[in-house]
Image (tube, rainbow, N blue to C red):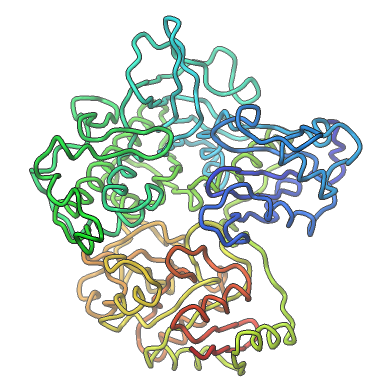
Length: 606
């Protein structure tokens, strides 16, 4: 499709798998990026059609649709009835974003980058890191489906870990890739990864093809063994400090290998979805292996579950640190960007700062490192190939990429009435008084956060000084007893309270950091059993209302920190609209909703 670059260029990045999302670019600038679950209210929802409909609020046309997934649309995407175009092109056509009359495969050009899933993770991280050159380390569950052929046999492999040499404007050279398969396959031919557009012809790289679980798959296996869905690995991360080193737990990795290879006797991969712990071979792991709610109230109380979670965290983070070292050695780059699902492991991210501290490595961890971020990566990668000389600074706004809702006072009063809520004028000081009296106050303002962290625009707030605060809020949110909470702190005070291991700040809540001596007893609600807290540093420039609210709390208490957790109930997505917020209050024991932009406090009678 011919594009006149004197006019605006619109690109829609669409991640169509779990964590489905849409990223809309205008001339390379991110206009919005949002996960489908925030609009559909279905956790991890795919097929981001509700998010596609939002495009119409910004433009009447799209020049390119770029697709991110792990299988190409020709392999898996459903087709629209009668016309036969893929459902995403059909959706754009029906919305009037592309021509309704001409060939839907020409207007707009549809670019399917599902064959380079890990490169899309790398692109999102690299472009948003601020580095001009870097090496990207991607640690993911199962990326692109790859056909493998040997001696007339064929099978499917999946990306698990990848390393890319990255440079502006659009250089992503594959350096290393681990491909996992469901079973052994002798004499496998190493396939050519990438595409003619994004990879130099004849490029070669180191590849390891095994029947072993990848690093993230090991975490998924342990998560499943503890009683959760494999995608809920954050729960395993919360459980790990309750465990300890236990010699009865067999090694999770084959430590004789120079690359991360799992213990095949212990971890059985079930690519592409999940993996399993093979407990039947190990007597200690069999203890409680048949436990269900009918026989045992909670398997996380069993020591073998706790100790396995501990082993999983310790061993996997060591393997990722080694992979980072390999990436630096193989490319010579000291700038490292980290993405893929494992990069959401804030315990591991903090570990790298200590493990790599003497190696001169500059680490950037992508905040939207799950598959939702591939919509951003796909859109940015395509744009930089179209307009390589246009440089946009993506470092200034990394997370508040959702929608902003301009409610009138009448809108607020009408919604409040529907939920039986009262509305009064309120200030930051009024909210602080509620927090000092052990009230939960929810916060709704500005553009919604993109990614899984609540950063003061869709947050639940509490007083961190209460000793029983964690148990109190976990019960309100219907979460497990062992799951910790985060803290938001005025940036100018962070080093007095926490050890950032050389970092100046932590604005995206991507690190679980140690508290300074004597701090734990001051804010017990947000300090985990291992003495850490996942923190968000806040400046007035980043979030004025939230900063001023924390400052008001500091003035009254001497504590420059608020207890902050995502504005949702267990199993629910973060709230997106004011209606979502009021519904959540109605369905819980929470009463107060603060709208700082309007100076309003809503109270729902429960």
